[in-house]
Image (cartoon, chains in turn purple, red):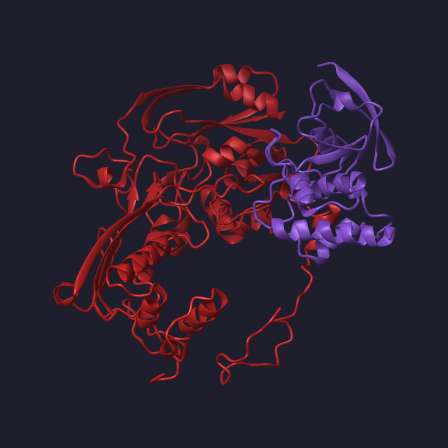
Amino acid sequence: MAKVPVQFTLNGSEKAEFVDSGTTLLHALRDKIGDTSPKGGCHQGSCGACSVIIDGELRLSCLTLAETCDGAVISTTSGLSDSGVLHPLQRAFLDTFATQCGFCTPGMIMAAKVLLDHTPNPSRDEVVEALSGNICRCTGYEPIIQAVLTVARSNSQNAA
Amino acid sequence: MELRKNYFADVRRDDLHEIGQPRPRSDSPGHVTGKTAFFADRNFPGMLHLKMVRSPHHHARIRSIDTSEAEKHPGVVKILTAKDVPHNVYTILILIQIGPEDETVLADGKVRWKGEAVVAVLAETERAAQEAAAKVKVDYEVLPAVFDMQEALKPGAPLVNEYHGQNYYLYDSGECRKVRFGDVEAGFTGADHVLEQSYQSSPIEHAPTETTGCVVAPEGNDRFTCYTNTQAMFFTLDNTSIILQMPGSKLHFVGGTVGGGFGGKVDVIVEPIAILGAKLTGRPVCFIYSREEEMQISSPRAAEKVVIKDGVMKDGRIVARKVTGYTDAGAYSRHSPYGAQKGAGHYPGPYTIPNVWIDTYCVYTNRTPSSAMRGFGVTIGDFALEVQMDKLARLIGMDPLEFRFINAYRDGDMKAHRQPTEGAALIECMQEASRAANWPVAEKYMAMSSYVKGA
């Protein structure tokens, strides 16, 4: 099968790969590049565990073809902490016990980050809406919402 | 967090350092940074992908299996059938002497539920494995199937599982687990009211976000490392050892990181066949359920039927309780004989009743085998019992919470299965619930105690 060259920026580093046409970004990230922070929970766009940020927008990497990401800027949860210092969202997820099994966590954090990047001080309803594409089957939604609101409150205090 | 100190003041310890204190979870830093290694995060060069050919029928005889076209499919490395599995007929609880072995790793001559594994295909890519699996030809002779427990227990019903010989699990106590305490018929005769009700539930899927699976790597020293999300590490290791007729010292299981289990990952399903594939090919093997398989193939909570007959007095005392419980094991035992047995001990509920009669049946049908899920054997029973308690309270015109205080078990009471009650706290929980829910009860109930005699 003919390979397709793909080049993109992942968490600040340049990556180049040859992929089979039709390869999903999830597969390329996990099995070719070795970033396993996006998870494959359903491979059909319904669970949100594979969520990544592409050019500032939240995307499901299981439904995104790698070949469409040429030249894109991609962020995943593994690239969030800066030289070992946790991102405020990661800190808040720890402090509010917003993780249980941890499988949905990287996707949840990506969804929360896109929300806060666009809307630094969201309402609770906006947080719920932003996380509505991400399934947590341990049903820990309330602490997750609290984690995001904690960061939002600290954003608004810093802005004041 | 608030710890109430007014309860059990003379037996409680207040020098505890951990209880009542929030502590960070040791696994959370890995979760929030994406560093936690789930089994599917392991990748090995040359790893093969395993896909199952599954039965499209609920009950059928296998006339023949033809893998010749599938073998020719590009990328296919190995195809496994029943004859390749050293000890193909197994049952998980054989480790604690609950037999007989009644389930096949790969179907041999017969399938007993829709979705049963028949042929395993190992290929270079997931896609090649999937495409080749579609080329395996299995010739079936469809047999009559039974899906309802009451139908399965009737004489002349299709026999689901020949290893049992009848459509129920044969306990040492006979066709069901039995609890006999006092004289239940005399209790009904002397009761002011008798109420018999029937409750039933459907199977429930756990639906973990991470599907069931494992990754196996053959090591240079003739051992196999199995990265798995099983919730039952040692059950899986020991059963794999039996199924593959391979000493446990050859098997190295790595796990403990489970992306949601809820009891759905305690069966020994993916590991033995993946390790066998690695052994026969000398290559790493990955076997991960698709979302569809997780929803349709993995064991659900059993469907249950519970029939409760109670005798109750106008003053609120339950004087007799007769329960018949049915647990739908599906086609194979897995953990269901144990679940049905747990129900037998549990059905009187947390209440002291002088006359009790309980029968619980573990029934085989041509449905997806059921197994563990969060309190299996008692959860559906509790639903039935507590709905029944509300109905009984309504029947005698009593407040449902006060009705439960009257019947609540207390330390020293003998339970129906002859275990004396120890460490009861139902009364104290209900007192707190009464306050928290602003559901007041008479002062005498608020003064009761689970362990102070006379209170």
